[in-house]
Image (cartoon, rainbow, N blue to C red; front, side, top):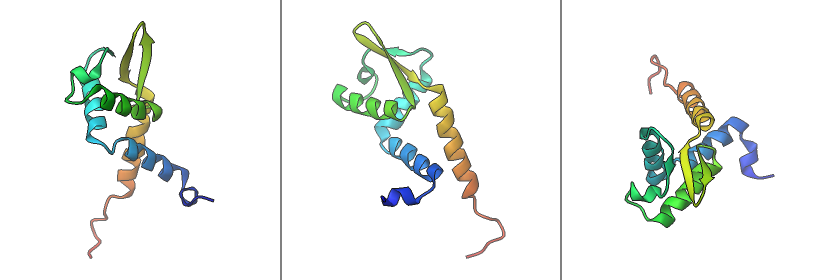
Length: 108
């Protein structure tokens, strides 16, 4: 048994999502896609200070976690946020932050 399996499923899920967000480039990509009114067709690295290879690696990670989606359109891929994945992210972290809110009457 792996030590990871000793933790609850929701704890594992939050940790996986946190890992997907653990690089500033991925945060920048999500923010860029959120600020764009349509899906981005073409090379996102034109809009970010990153090489194509770096952007591609980060897009792959975000896509594997279900936070973005990409559809092939001819020779290009259209990228946008995955609504269900982003809702899952918000719910997971929102629930976590509710659970770890410090009690006001505790003193240490």
